[in-house]
Length: 247
Image (cartoon, rainbow, N blue to C red; front, side, top):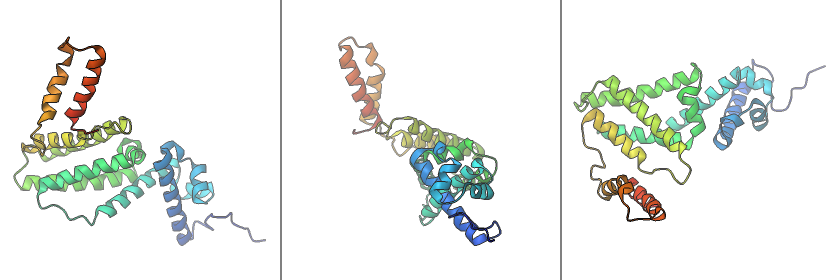
């Protein structure tokens, strides 16, 4: 008697076309769950149900949940890279570095759970491969700065500064409540790094009222002319001005 396959499962591991279809469905389903509900939501049972396959299919294609999470992170990052591949590189190597920083931060904020997987919570397998690919892009950008004579530190130190500051910026912004994120933090961090590795003035060199607000905020505790409530209100207003936020 011929065995009837469960609905949605692949007929056999030897059928590459069906395996590829199932793999794509599983990755899309897991990616949607992670984006919507976080990494913990991507249980084998939940992903299998969302993808319309049987749980053994996931183990057969990805080994275990860790392998699935790594594959999802790589899949999403590949999509992101493909979407941005049509962007023409800026002929100015410093502007190209700025653009790369902004894209990195935007990706992290848009996909926090996947960003976490790609930054220290994955295995040494697939995520390491895609991380190395991203590192190669950063290395080329820094090398172009060096070739243009605009780097004042070693390439290795410049790369380490950019990586640590960029990842730290994303994690800091993700730790802030929605609607209360500092809109100027990424730009300020980016320009501080650029100044450190190139010695060139940042894009926001004229602080204007932001600097005055920061100075007044720092000395606010020394005044006795305000009540506690007034001091609290003024502190909030000065913080907003110092950040350059209109909200």
